Amino acid sequence: MPIRILPPEVAGKIAAGEVVDRPASVVKELIENSLDAGATDIHVEIREGGRRLIRVADNGGGIPAEEVPLAFARHATSKLTDVQDLNQIATLGFRGEALASIAAVSQVTFLTRPRAQAVGQFLRVEDGQIARQEGRGCPAGTVVTVEHLFRNMPARLKFLRQPQTETGHIHTVITHYALAYPATQFQLTTDGRQAFQSTGNGNLYDVLIAVHGLEVAEQMLEVQGANDLDESPREWPPSPVPGHPSPSSTLALFGFTSVPTLHRANRNYIAFFVNGRWIQDRSLAHAVAEAYHTLLPAGRHPVALIFLEMDPSEVDVNVHPTKREVKFRNGRQVFGTVQRAVRRTLVEGAPVPALLHASRTWPAPEWEHHQSLLSLGRGEPLSTQMAMELYRPGDLGQEPQPVGPVRLPLLRVVGQVGQTYIVAEGPQGMYLIDQHAAHERILYEQIMAAHGQQAISSQTLLEPVPLSLDPTLAGVLAENLPMFNQAGFDLEPFGGTTYLLRAVPSILVVPDVGAALVDILEMLRQGDDPLALQAEQLVIAAVCKRAAIKAGQTLSAEEMQQVIRQLEQCESPRTCPHGRPTVLHFSVEQLEKEFGRR
Ligand code: ADP
Ligand code: MG
Image (cartoon, rainbow, N blue to C red; front, side, top):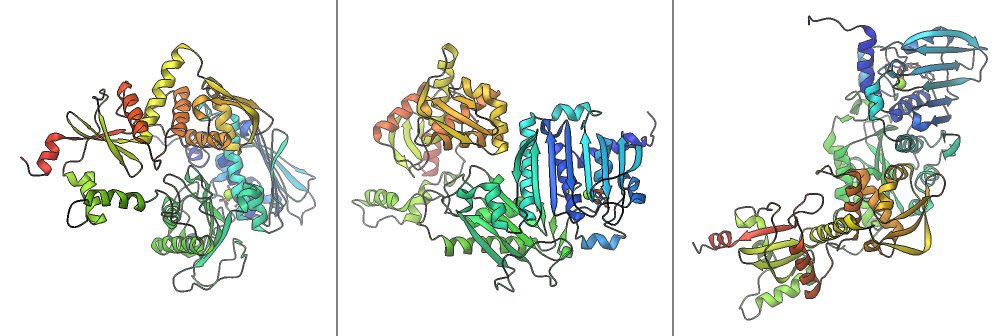
């Protein structure tokens, strides 16, 4: 084919794909417009997860009649004039492509009236073309209605998830903007029901309660900080108003972060806002994680809301069409400020005993016991450092290899190290077994074997446990409900995002079954699935992971024996159900070579 310039409607759809990838991104763009228009009241209404309808109504400045058609043109904006302005963006929007993009992939109606004009304008856009425009009476502000999203883009439509899942994403967008703009009242109505509301009274803590609930809010510590040069505390609470940047180029930080006893299975509860914009930033999430170093159990993450304010010229928001990522001029300074502020809050506000097994060295008391045994009958006791060096598998020159799906030989248990690994010997050398991963594998194979013949054994709870889930997790559950019931749960929808838990798989009889179920839903949401398991296997694997012996648990000799015997019975003993190794093997040759015997 010869090279041709694409017809505008094709080019428009291609560009739209970058901005609008799911209903939540439409909601995001529309509420950003409302906020830029100075709205103090934003009402979002959705039907069928936004696929059928998204309506955003605001009481902001509105658009003058003569400018209304322009708003839908690509690269049409009232927020930028020249290229200099790109260095000083103080509004949420600036690219002038959201409305054009949304209109390219849906049917849009627009009703808007500036306070100063007596009559409003009604505009209907179909397939990116203005189909109708007329004067109409309406309240001051703007109402945008988006219907039949992606109807003209079957490929995108196919990628939309269940309505509950899309609703969950929309809920997440709205709660984050509510947190960023406590002085604006947000409401979300889903399929006619009110799903969220913030007061708009300007108090961030009230929004925190509305979003995360009182119980979580009470376990949050206030964080404040500034850049290195100026650590002086700031006025509290400063309000992140776009268009009113702080006069100097100081970086100011405020927010909330959880006490170390409150933690979650993933990082989704760590949120960052830069000058009132909700952003995603892996490096900053890492800064927060580092601040909690040794304070949280391995694999757990805090809840944190971090607001950063800086001069707009310090941050480039024009790095991604969705404006969800930013680049800091001085990223290191921002990283350090976040990390120090959170760490200081934790140290001052929540002095906790040094925790569990978060760092990679063996727990000290246990180790000292072993050390004294090791040094019995020898002159000098081994220094802890030296002794650990000896045990580090990396020191064996060759990395120990996890091996293929071969059955294990008969093994003799030697002992447990770090309350995490079982040391065993076999004919071909030494084996280190990860007790948690191994037990996961054992439970998984036992369940799958029994499952072939009959239903998975399940235990009815004495009293049903009501679980009110956040909408995203409720979406995950709704999508997988049949699988959960097959895996031995008895779960009954109880209206909205609440479920009644009546029975759990027998292996999951733990003190807090509700929390266990939430953990399992988190695992599924994270989609930690390198092996592309079927949905049902994924649910079962997640149950096994939650039910398995944990790292950090002291095992008796009998318990270790039992784990090893059962692992020897497994079809694929060398990996956990998610594909990670359960066993490391140090061969006799490897050991001989390392000790210079050969
Ligand atoms: P951008 O926000 O990047 O400027 P958009 O396509 O989102 O681009 O919007 C185009 C223009 O339409 C905006 O610059 C603004 O002037 C106007 N506009 C859009 N939504 C609203 C609203 N809710 N209230 C007032 N003006 C609006
Ligand atoms: Mg916009």
